[in-house]
Amino acid sequence: MSFLHPEYFYYLLPFLFIVLGLLLIRKEPQEEFFSKEVMDKLRVTANTLSLKTRNKLFFLISVLIIIALAQPVIKDGVIEIKSKSADIMIALDISDSMLAEDVYPNRLKFAKQKAIDLLKLAPRERVGVIAFARNSYLVSPMSFDHDAVRFLLSKLSTNSITEKGTDLMALLNVLAKTVKKEGKKHLLILSDGGDKNDFSREIEFAKENNIIIYILGIGTQKGAPIKNKDGSFIKHKGKIIVSKLNENIAKLATSSAGVYIQSVKSNADVKAMLSEISNSSKKKELQVQEVQKFIPLFYYPLYLAIFILLIATSSLARKNSNLGALFICIFLISPDANAGLLDFLDLKEAKEAYEAEDYEKSAKIYAKHAKDTNNSESFYNKGNSLYKQENFDAAIKSYKQAKFDDNRSKASTLANIGNSYIKQAKEKSLEEALKAYEESLKYKEDKEVRENLEAVKKELEKQKQENKQKKDDKSQENKDKKEGKDKEENKDSQESDKSDKNSNKNKDSKDKKQDSDKKDDEKSNEQKKEEKKNKKKDDLDKLDASDEKAQASQSEKKGQMSDEEQMKWLNKLNAEQNTFMYMLNENDKSNEENSDEKPW
Image (cartoon, rainbow, N blue to C red):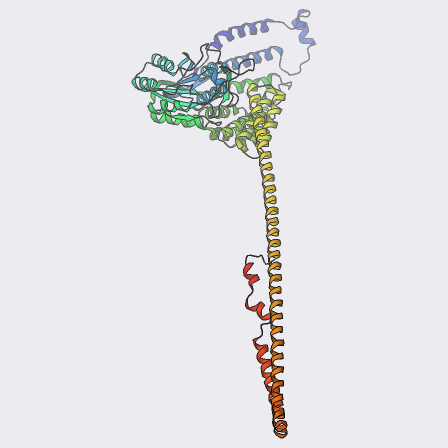
């Protein structure tokens, strides 16, 4: 057995013995006035612990606590930890064009957040930082200390370098001088590309110095003007400059065997970039460390100290005390309390699992502890583990179960709830996130939460305008359809009226023609009847010249024949006559002329 912190013995034990000596030689107040014989006669025996006995117990308790602080352990072997890394140098463009606000809140802050995301996603990589504009400067050398790198990143601004413009050649020179190692050098540039179109010099230099360039394009093709500190826009020759993303810089990345990716709102671009760097790099073992593994024993002296404290502060008589029963009450009747004393081991394991990115194991341990103890911190940490697993619904539920009393913890919990709602990407998640951020800021003002709140407000306003535009477009579409329908009905009505007019006109013309034909037929019949009558009269005159008997007989016979012939002639005349109904059924010219007419 050994002690991890034996210095507690050196500094605390001597002082403790001095205090004990002073307590033991100190007399009780009444002994200053009465002798021991008198006190023995006056004292009533109560069978309780004396003052000296209690002081000795307190001394023993103090010794046990010091032993626990010294952390007694048993060695349990050695663990060898190897650290592999592909060195990544981050180059951040801090020229004035990075103040354009075509991405929220502006290009520079957006790029810094992307760099911080990379640090979170690559905790075991060595990372350095270079800031560049017209000239380039080393902000941080290659380091495993991501907290320090993150701090230096957060302090960068366009005022950090006084020169204006963007010079990538100067950046490559700084990298070549700074990272002097064999093999490939990986450079990740976060920039809007500047204004240059030809990068042939930079490509040639990168190939000569074995530099692989990865570029994360910051900005949009639409672009945005650049604001000055006073709120005005930067102008050139009297015109406002609109800075746009220069995609010509992609050739610099692809020609050096690297990758160009245009940035997006999520961290998908950073993940893709890390994947590309990892695939093209050979990680080297930069750190090999042996770590001694121990079995902790400090809780044993701590348990004993607590037990003795209960005895020392007890008012039970020595004869009537039952220490065995007291022991049972403490450790056997309340097994949960005994288990609770070991909770720190589980929480330590959960924390280590979380730091090792084993979020599933961490969530299970925190969930068990939260269920057993109803501890708010465990619910909060469980929510963090679930958030890392992208189980946002369960994370929100766990965060809401964490009930803190201090404003700082309440603000953090509500901020995480808002982040979880945003990650859900559901229909009403933005409204819920907005409420959570507003509640968080009521308890504690935080810059990042305020920025997230403003971003959510802008997105909601954008969605509101899009919905309004869709509604207006739909209304206009319905209006156009209605006008088109009315126009078509008016057109059909006009065509129908025109058809009716043509039909009536043709019908009138046809009726007039038929009346004319009928009159001609009637005239022809009258003429034929007149001719027949005249002929019959001539025949009768001839019959008068013959003898009377023959004339009578012939007249009778002729009269009969005349009636039959007349009937035959009339029937034949009627059969040859063209009537109105016959003409209409035989040749319906009206229907031929109006064949496109609608049935209605």
